Structure formats: C-alpha cells, structure tokens
Image (cartoon, rainbow, N blue to C red; front, side, top):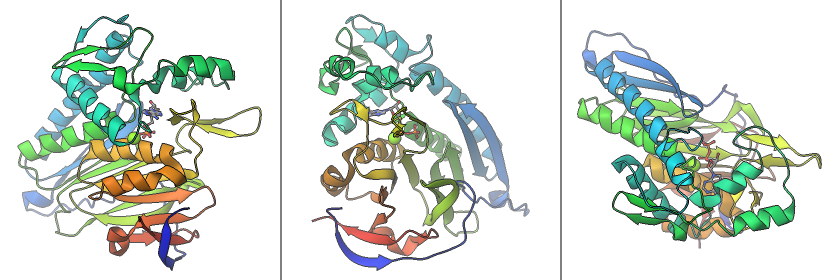
Length: 348
Ligand code: ADP
Ligand code: MG
C-alpha cells in the first residue's frame, strides 16, 4: 500500500454470520418503536426493509412500488427497460424518464470524478466475460481490445431527458442502481415522517436516523476471504454502508485465477489491483455505491486520489494480502472482529 500507516490495531473477535443490520423488533406501545418489515426480491437481489412508527406500513408499500418501478426502468437485461431501449438505439436519441436521466447524469459525474475507474459504458466487456448470463469465459485479448474501443463514458450525450449513445456503445447502471434505490426508499420514508428506518439491499445497508431507542445502528461487513462470516461491525446513523467485493459474483478460470464482475475499464479485465473488498460509508447511497465500485477498480495505486476528493466519505478496504485499512474518522465506530490486522489510512 502507498498509504502512510499511523496506527495499527489487530483485534480478534467472534464472527457474526452475514452482513446484517440488527434492527430490534421491540413492540412497546409507543408507535415510534413498532417495527414494520418487508422482504422484496428485485434487481437480482434480496432486499429487506424495516421502518419504525405509525406510518411504517404505508411507507413500505410505497417503497416496494418504487423499487419495482426503478427495476423496470433501470435493468440492462430486461427487454422492456429504458436502459435496454438506449442500448439498442443504434445511435439515435432516446427520451427517458426523469429517474433514468437523473441517474445517468449522476453516474456520468461519478465516472468523471473517479478518473474513469467507474465507466457505465463498460457493459459490452462485462457481457463478453459472461457476467450477465453466467456463461463465463475468458475472452481473447483482441476481442477485448475491439470492445474497449467503444468504452468511453464521455461519449454519452445527455440533454435534459434525451440521451444519445454512439452506435455500438451500451451502458448499464449496475454499479449505482442499488445505492440510488436506497436513497429513494429513505426519501419515501421521510415523506411519511418515518424517523427511524434501515434497509438492506443485498448487503448494501442504508439507515435513516438512529434506532428508535436513540442508539446507533450496528452494521456488519463481510469478510471477503470468508464471506459467510463478518469482518467488522460499524456503528452508524443516517448513513449508507456499501460494499463491492470480489466474492460477490466471480468465476474461476481454466487458469485457476479468480475473475470478478467488476471490470477495469483501462484494460477490460476484471479488476485485480490490490483490493478484494471496498466499503464506503457516507450520506448519499448513490455516491457510496459509485465509489465502492470505482475504488475497487482504482486499487492500491490510484485509490488515494479518489478518496482525497471525497473527504466526507469513509472507506474500509481489504487488500489481497489480507490487511484492513480504514479512514481515521470512523476509528471510534469501527470494530474489527476478524483476525486480519487493521490500520488507519492517512492520505497524503
Ligand atoms: P454489486 O452490484 O455486487 O453490489 P457493484 O456496486 O460494485 O457491486 O456493481 C458491480 C456492477 O457494476 C457489475 O455487475 C456491472 O453491472 C457494473 N460494473 C462493473 N464494472 C464496472 C465499472 N468499472 N464501471 C461501472 N460499472 C461497472
Ligand atoms: Mg457500486
């Protein structure tokens, strides 16, 4: 690592199972402490929503509808989605919904601010590796080079709700859609005057306020080397905790190497730049989601310059040599329960 290490702490602790948000189901009389929960399967992932208080159930009904609406607009693999329409537009302008235009605009900003480590136009390369179908293969290098000629987010033209992609270019919002969805769900909760809520969208946790008893939410992050156990526990309120890891979707090639579903747009190969997992903690779910993917791609050498530009966000990265690095600000709210050493990152 190029990070300067100022403190080392290695704690060995009990191992919890799975990423979990431990929302307590108290059933006291006060409405504020009554929990309402909902399981939804959407965006290829299991989602669990918990809202406290009198309006919880109504908020969950609206949240579920919103998830299904966003899924139908944003899925790159569904032939009825707006993204599909864009990806098959043969260079013609396409009019999309406010959601889709807004999220593409935000994603393009994040592509720029992460020096192209995030690039929503990497989709054809992702498909070539078989990550959209599960029909995995290691493509020939000339094929990757050919596809990379059409990977360049700066070629996506956004004019209000009208979007134009060059012919042969395709996008997917898989790196940011869940974070955006989490933000939208919490906005719905707020509109119903829900003060306390937590949602888990396939391991992405986003919390509104504190727990009804006034304490912080405890959120566990998986150990990328043993994904069935937890690596650390964070105490947070009003924040998102979003992780990208090489254990989420991957295959082992005939060469014995592990290939994961996050593509490095600089070479068209699954990112393998020193990190096996990246967790981002901060206010905006969509920014955390974009950053978790981008910092994973940036790896050891290039992540400090991205992190330094997002000083309001905290990071926990796990390197491929089994070390945890975390930003100083979360030191008091971060408990390492793995056997890996954990060190504070200081970015010069
Ligand atoms: P997950 O969806 O598992 O939580 P991520 O948020 O890291 O993980 O998103 C990974 C998804 O983002 C991939 O499945 C793919 O759709 C897309 N993707 C992969 N590499 C990139 C990249 N470099 N830039 C933008 N999107 C990417
Ligand atoms: Mg992401």
